Image (cartoon, rainbow, N blue to C red):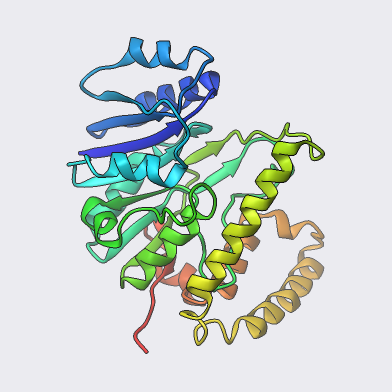
Length: 295
């Protein structure tokens, strides 16, 4: 059985789409835990109306930070597998079933990234989201893990509070010695909100939170990956040259927006991904495999 954990705050329309997509796209047995930070837009009433043995609302009533809100739910999860979503995600292509199948197929896999595509905003043309961190790690934005692995690494780091929690968890699972993989299929659509006024006080606050999270991540993980990332500059230089060659050969100046290029870039620039990833995992449901080798 799978536990699906998501947090919400005043995004009723998006939350409804998320929950409905889980129900329609998932055949595995599951429980959905929805933690609410004190919504005032009808979310409380909606959650009350759908509450059941499989849909479990948790009314926190105030903002305590995403990390703690999720961790409080993780503490009561008793299923073999768990995943975290955002209320602005929509499950597609039976994405949760695919990720669960991957985890069951190989015990060395400690996390499956649910490959996610932005459906609105400035990155809508990107084949999927997820970038290489300065520590050389391909970050997981939304993922699924065996519950024992999540508990082993301590869940989300509450030092980060709201931002940077996903990259930090990715690093913790990787450095604990597990494989991290990406689904080949797009598992989630992401309806990210982009309406925030760049001149607003809240926008400036968000930018500051992102900056602090980036600095904290660098202080915690960049040194740990120092040896692994030493070749990143050479890899990225090779990618740039390869892109020039491919663009010329296929007469495709926009090749950088293709899934092929994104996969290639991540494989070549990621410190923990084999350059032969596509060949090694040709017949599997996953690719972009990260594994930290022992020094």
